[in-house]
Image (tube, rainbow, N blue to C red):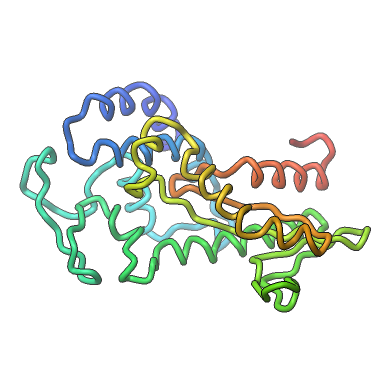
Length: 239
C-alpha cells in the first residue's frame, strides 16, 4: 500500500512541490528525490529474513525520509528551520538528518554502515549467481597492496576487481547538478574509482568495475551491468 502511494504521488505531487518550495533545503530534497526514484523496491520487498526486515524505528525513518518529513521535532516554519548543532563536529545540522549522513567528524558512520552492508549484499548475490567471489582479499594488487571490496574469479584465470562506493548527492560539490540530473553523484563516484584503480589493474592483466550507490537508491551504470550479467547467469531470460 505504501509503495502504491509513493508510485502514484511521487512524480507529480512531490516533484512539483519540491521545485516550487522556498525551503533552504529544497535542493537537498530534490537531489534525494531524484536518487530515490530509482528505488521502487524498499517498500515493495516482502521481509523474509533479517537482511530484508526493518525494525520499527528503521521503517519510521525510511518513510519520513522518503516523504521529506523532519526527523526531529520543531516548532518553526520549515522555510526557516531551527539551527541544530551536530554533537560530533559542533557544526550546523538539520532536522532531516542530512548532515548526519556525511559528517566527517562522526567518521562517516552512516555511509560506512551502508557501504559494508552493500559489500555483503554484492558478495552474496554474485555467489548466488555462481561466481567465485573473494571478500576484501589481501595481496591481490601487486603495485600498491590496496584491498578491493571483492574479486570475481573468471574461468580463464583473470579477475574482475570490484569496489563499492556510497555517493551522497546532497554534498555541496554535487548539489547543483544532482538536484536536476538523476545519477550525477553516482557518475562522479564511478569516474573517481576508475581513476584510482583502472591503470594499476590493467598493468597486471585484470579488470575493474566501480559499484557506486547513491544514498537514495540509484546505482551506477557499471553496477547495473554487473547485476544484469549476474541475473543472466541465474536465468538467461532475465536482464
